[in-house]
Image (cartoon, rainbow, N blue to C red):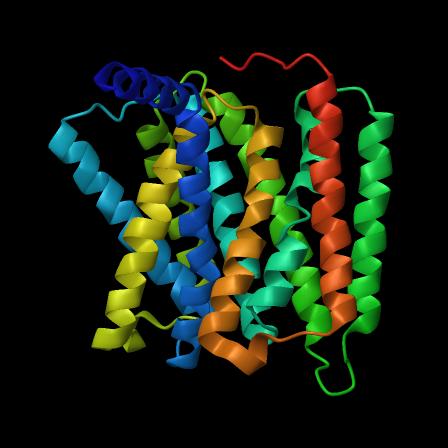
Length: 317
């Protein structure tokens, strides 16, 4: 009996070890699924999108700085790498702003369904950065994504909610930016530590968006203030959902291809919509056509995963 238990235990441990990086990836996605929920809570408490991004990047950046100090790790990188990291950080900051603004203008469900087009945009990002050839199957599933998006767009009530159209544009922009910074990170992580990458990207993103927000009046440094409720959720957002999850997300890119990462991230709206329905209830309920279109979008991307599985997987260093 004990022998059978030991054999079963060893099999489970081997299975866990084999898929360890995939478990890390999906745990990270579960954390990211809470991001939109926390953003919605912060908007309801009185903060705007610019303030949320400002505090999120500041808290996450300081957290990573403390982490690197405690590890006594060198943060020296080449000038060329530094500019790449800082530039990618700006893409990340603008992605977060577009994402949170989309939620503020609509709801978590709408923003995250359109964010699930990230894998679709990743195909184009890889085409540009990796100089891949056009894949007919990816083109087919891409057309299915467009069809699903069209159903959702056509079904929304713009007469009562005119801001929905702007929210859709922002969510699609956030997805496009996410595709590009993810593919760029998949290149950078081959030669740089994930903590160093995250540190410089968050630093670059924080300082650039702070300057931009101050110039356009979205943020006034002398008027910044938060209450206890806001501080708690900003801390969760900045530490758990950003610096910690960011480290894990960049780390797994050493072992998992960027398309697979972004493909798996498409489970995020499913997690988040379920959480949003449970927490915000009526404000998150949508029509049947919305969920039908969402099913087509997510299903077409999963179909692309099936097509990818038929090909020999590309080894990622």
